[in-house]
Length: 315
Image 1 (cartoon, rainbow, N blue to C red):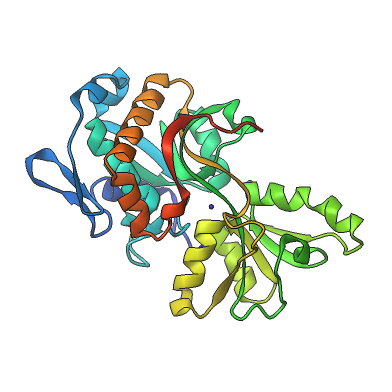
Image 2: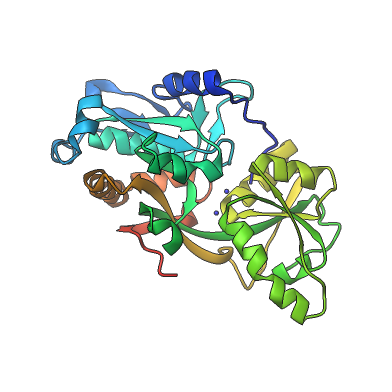
């Protein structure tokens, strides 16, 4: 659920390679090596679980690395520590470092265009992905999920909500920006029939390759709203331009966002041992309170799950 400050991904092949090397060992201020081989994440020291490490696939143990794809920026899930630099931070990055510490390997994050993440995992370029990805049955056909949050879609509007958008129905007949290949795009498409039935006209859906591009459309007035995950929308409303650029539309009928569903860590289907080890490591972080502390750091504790599940989506 996650909207985004207007930051362009300075990505070409060489930059992506450099990011892989840099982000494997660096992150936000609260993610750092601690004593005795532990890693500190969100103020919590995390030590390796030997049994979980032993359960990893041989190729992961041998490399000592889980290659993770992520779409940057998408606050609060994935962000750059500082604009113009390559170091990463964010909820997904911190959680990845915590999982890696528990499993005794590194979670090495590399930026990847969102709609190319699943194909890249299928092609074997990555073992996993952490990018606030909605778990659904269609994606489950080609990848597995370890679900770590539950959230829906939110509506981001300009500061002061000049168009008086209050519900999803108020987007009918208006220009709405959204990132391509996302659950939010599917939601807009599925709402078209309700718009037409109400005689309010179809939503003018404007798709963009990156969420930051969609946000730029909203900022420049090309769209009256942007649809994105609720946590991202809330984060952007609170932080962009000191909280003076955007507002989050809060619909009392959808307190957790529209069509709230599980978000998951995507894992290659050829690595079931990795999927199961991540699930057990995640449950350990839930049980000892680490997950809640990571989510609290980004102001989204309400989306945390109490049980780590696999492929939890039912539709």
